[in-house]
Amino acid sequence: MSVAEIFERVDKNKDGKISWDEFAEAIRAFSPSITSEEIDNMFREIDVDGDNQIDVAEYASCLMLGGEGNKEDEDIVMKEAFDLYDIDGDGKISASEIHVVLKRLGEKQTIAECIAMVRAVDADGDGFVSFEEFKTMMSCNNKKLQ
Image 1 (cartoon, rainbow, N blue to C red):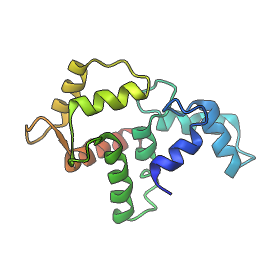
Image 2: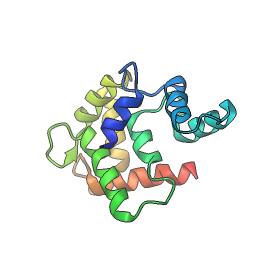
Image 3: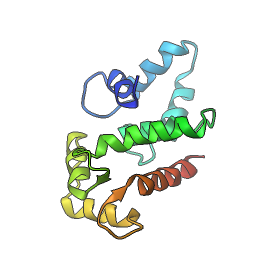
């Protein structure tokens, strides 16, 4: 099962984000005795941007936090997350692709803000986010969580 498929199963209302309630339901399915406080702590660690919802990038990033998987597993998860944003499948993410994905997730970023996001991680200056740049960006997010 891919990252996207798992995410979609947890996202019960199909709004493109996992709410605290959806997250708690999924966690309790595997660990019925977990406390709400423990769930809340986990949720806050994964919700990097603090918007009280877990988006697909945060979700994919959290799958790599445990360090239990090997490098190959991490690359597979990362590639699946990258592919969610790479709508046209050309191997790079444009600002317009980010804009489309964020709109689907209910975000209200402008195209100018999406361009700024790309520029922030675009190490080679080509105007796109490559897979390697995406991995670097996500690795930085992981370090913030630990």
